[in-house]
Length: 256
Length: 256
Image (cartoon, rainbow over all chains, first blue to last red; front, side, top):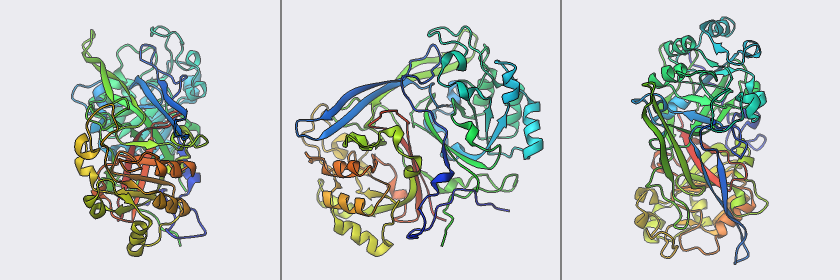
């Protein structure tokens, strides 16, 4: 059986319809600005105006320079971030960045424990209701922490720059990470700043995913706009050669 | 009449097929590295290693910082680049970045004139063969200059940093730009460093497109892999708030 997924464009030259069904596209990306969330020890995003106004010829011209750590804002972790033989950002096959997306709702668990580690039971509970997670899927956690973005104190547990003390937010537990590797998912992600929970010191989930060449999406926005199953996700990172990650524009197409 | 375009994903749980038909995805993006082409006066891309190796715990950890002008490598020009009331990068509606793509082949004309300005006649010649360009289309020029990337002397006409003297490459002529605005295209682009030809001093095409809120794609890669009509393009720029452009990952899905 083959299904055509919900990326539907209407026919060329069809005057009575728009070429794209824009209502089905959702942007899962936070803008990069001076409030963008970065790891306390990482270089924050900065934008520097190089030109902004009418030039000598009377024409408007505006241009900026940008700078940041690869790991902040809505971004992708390339497998080489935590695995020496993993893909760098530019090496990830594009097809792996596109696929059917599952959204596992763990808001209730995370409400009671800021450092909650998602379990295999959480994955299985989702599968019981929505069906087995098929190979090639993209699996996102909806922890609910996205509602705090970009308030670092609430979102990360601390707004102190330069120190990781006091970080607290949910993430993938190691057993859940292994279960998703076993299911041969193409990518994972969540609405927090890290695949691992905030108080992690061994970064077990990062290492398990990276060693399996599974990229991770962090600081994913607007997860309340996706259904648990049925949407199609496209995550396109800046194509940094030798990158350990990078800013990533993430969109999804809602099911019909 | 409605058509389903060629973004076809196979069924969930279908063991005999891959979830994505990867053979239909083409990456139209050059990697960002120290060879990436930038305007002679713009800050080039740089990547700085912050960590690269096994840390005190014995775990591999790698991370970089990046910096560049918004306008270099495979990137998007936001309308505010040349129009004070145009959209900034983060303001461009996502639906405008997705659509059916036309590739107008002007290689022959550009072979004879490095500063060739594409004409209305070139657009009409394409339409005579491939049909009228419908509203919402994305229109790319295939000048053939992509074969020179990233050799600045051949691609830009000069490899002298800091000076725009001697720049020579093809672009959209002003009449062609106005004709595409009239056709209500969603986006334009080409396989050179600028929408305008290299010896332009008034940047007429940039201004015409930007004043119509039409984003532009520059340094688009691999145009030889797209047909003149029938592919679907997705161009996702880094979501820079207040950006005048930004690095952009561009992919296309080939027709069935």
